[in-house]
Length: 315
Image (cartoon, rainbow, N blue to C red; front, side):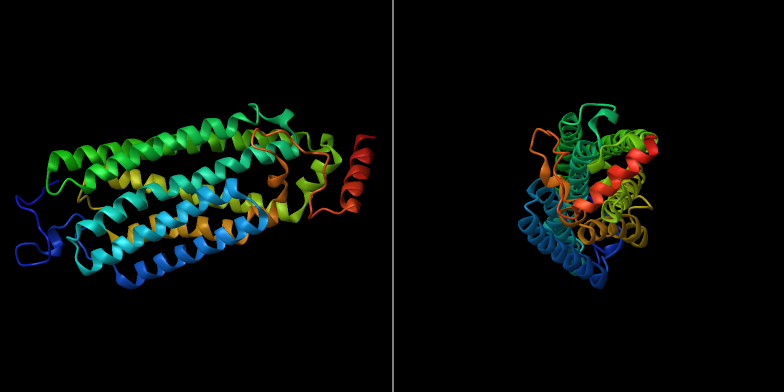
């Protein structure tokens, strides 16, 4: 990784685009689209949060959308001038951290799913899910923020820039590890629920078999997968340091960062937990279940039918 011996402030014959960190001027149309789209999703998420009173999910998810929006505004500034320090700081810090907020929203859903379908099938006590994974996510966020801030303010100092990049890399590696553990626990929980599907309570059976719940779980799974792919890409990007071939490939960045986060936000905005998993509002902050209460999207006949099905299967 090489830096010029002086600080470039604008594109010139001495400071061409080719020697900048990314080696290209970000595409204006693409970045305007991403900034506008994430901004729109931010507004929708806030509106849904107010409507469905789902602040625990909405706050981190909306922060993720906000960070994405600000990050792409930073890339728009870089299109105008690749040496714009404000633009570089905005995009390096916000786009690095945004998926951590999106992941935090996903982590919160597991506790409520466990409380709805049956905490007895969970490998760990439900209330510990947010404590464990939000704490790990926070550590990842701190590392990425510290590294991004250090790199953004390096201003040609190679040692400082490398140190910031390594801290960011450590934060993303930790985030990927956290995602892997979370994914493993989710898979094990749903395996246990499926094996014991005929032993679920009538209300849990009604939720488990409902189309809305299954669509919500599918949306969370897609979002989880795309965020994981994005983080894996960022590891590969930062592993070779600044100005690596991957870092200087805009198409790969658009596909494996922008589009992956875009998909995650789209599916969880369309299949919002407020509408497709309203049971998430039926648990308080310490995770006590409310399995005996019927959700707004399940009629009494649905629960009764589930109970009859359970009785027949048990016979």
